[in-house]
Image (cartoon, rainbow, N blue to C red; front, side, top):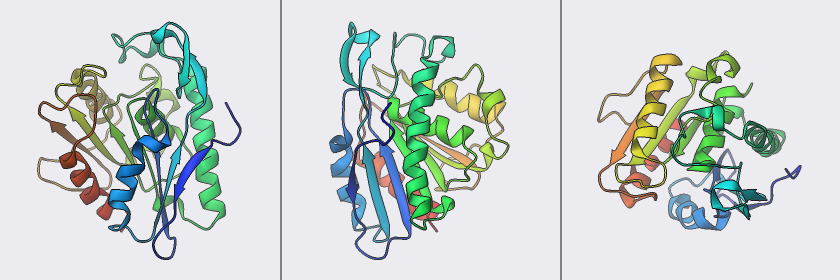
Length: 238
């Protein structure tokens, strides 16, 4: 893993007081989420957006082909049985993301004004970072994703892990990261890790998990999901 992740940066419109770091999915790059950052840019004039690029690594699931990935994947059929996880790859990515967070802290941005998020594989790293970090981040976003290292997350989570607010969005027709894996991950967060689950219609709660399902949505985002995320971000960054 490179010591410093290459990344795109979208500078804030006004004075920089908060940062959103968002990690793409397997085979993508930071460019894939640039349209979303640009869409939300005007609503968050004090936010800097950081869109890292994953390193090129061989992916077992794709016949060992090299592509941008945050960790290796061998199958999509056992995502909530994390004994199959590429633990060393995941933890290397967590460490690399933490360096990006440290850069923001060094620039004077408080930890509680830093939001970490990601899609699919990127969501795994974002959630894992937030749960295990010594830092008290402002919130974490997971889209179409799952909780990695779930067989040991109770043992490696930080003492303050369940104080963080979480936004989780998942399409019910996701053929890649099955919707059931999202549901199982939410159960893990609420039943084993003690996160409160927000009631439907509640925009935000600290701490708390907001779980939004999107009917018929495949392995992608949607305008409604981004609108819901925007509402959550407004509250998270207050």
